[in-house]
Image (cartoon, rainbow, N blue to C red; front, side):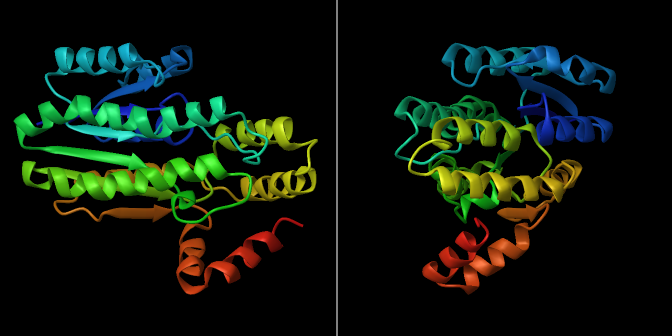
Length: 270
């Protein structure tokens, strides 16, 4: 039986690559994003674009209801969409921090709430939460982004225990450096809010590091293949790690003390 998948953030990057890859492999895919005009080309792959504003309750509900009405169920939810604002905690408006948490955490939780009843009814479901290496390790100027991804890690671990008996798997994906427009947008925001403050020097260092990371970033298809591996496993791993630098960073984080790891990170900011 063909499985129905909802992929959020399908207008670019990992979301777009995942939607296309899964559609090519026989899934019934709905690609959701706020910028629906950027998803029209997905139709050629048999993907159904659907409008979704993660900051609006009515949009979240309408999206899920439409898919269940048309397809009968949502078998796999891939929470990929996210916001990547960077800036010193002192400089960033709390309103922007709240928006980032709204999109990266609360919208994820709300979509899960909305799909769980149909998954429990079917005694089957795969919930894939796209975290980040940044859900385990931190960089300066990424305070709220890291807070949101650390939250996704904890949310997923607790949820996995709650829903396992209903035949539902919760899978965390931790990408490293991946080609995405988020890095450019995040750096632009960083320079706007912290580029001319007490944190100017650090902002320049972080921007330089992100530029270097972008040069070596992996193609999003790497993550799309990890997601497919996870959702097709009878007993999936709780976490899948991939893309540029991911495994090395997580290994070093385990190996080094907090202060040693801090020194390593800050040495890259010069």
